Image (cartoon, rainbow, N blue to C red; front, side, top):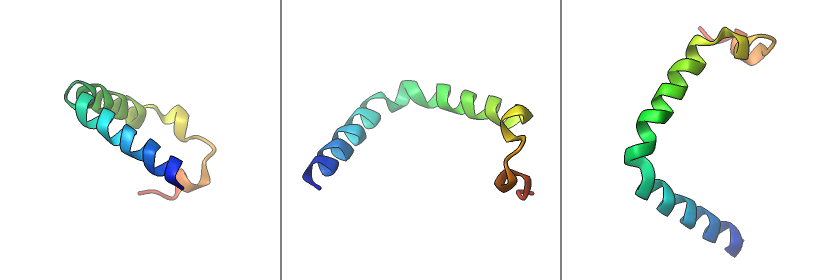
Length: 50
């Protein structure tokens, strides 16, 4: 359990430090993913979304 807490703490620190430069790339990737219907094919859980 202590190892999990340590990993989560380290990830949060890295994310906070690098988020200003990572955020635009993540938004762009999310936009591309939303436009690519290839990734949604064959997934019943995705087909039910409005």
